Length: 285
Image (cartoon, rainbow, N blue to C red):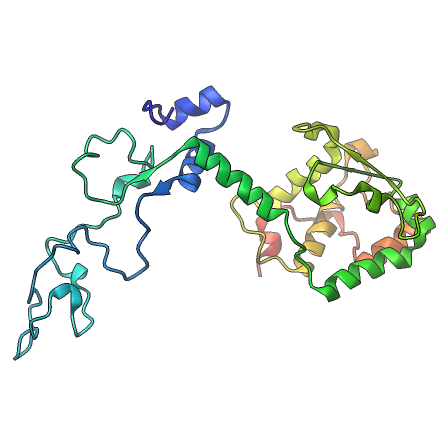
């Protein structure tokens, strides 16, 4: 649709998505023909053919020693003072359609070209998903700490607290037998998978995702989060009254001895109702 000169709003209506979603998709997966120059690098479209010399107001007693301005021995940046400077990065790319497709100046333009190709975008998207789910992002000591929490619980208490694990079809769950049984083969839980594209089959989990997004809106990176941040978020979210829990909080349902033991091990504690915060200011330091 981009190649047919559809607007982002029109594409969004056809695909039942918002125009902002289409815009983010186009910008995230568009491909530049040439690499994007580094900060401070000469990105003038005339750089290769430029023969200019002595464009500075003060070139010194001995001139520029025969150097071209683009190779200034004084490390002066010629693009800041040259009247002929033209950036290779087109300012029109900051506006829809954010690519060079259908541009009236495409054939004679010398600037860096950028295009959106559906099959490349699809391949890049699936690669990012594979990378996001590959490997263990925990140190050996962190994994040991998680294992200690599970093993203190004991098999009988674990079975009462986690009789069922409902998840999606991610590669991290590709070995359900290892999750359902201990190393000695003792059954400890049962793993069930949702159908593809059927998040409605685990609505309680999706509701938590909605609450998380009130604290961490889309576009906010999770990378800076610490264990303390995640614990704080969990405490506030689980202190919210839920209609489907008879106006109780998830903490209220963990009133058994085993439940309290698990909360203690996870260092989770309820937040007073008038102090619950579900907004980005929760993590402002």
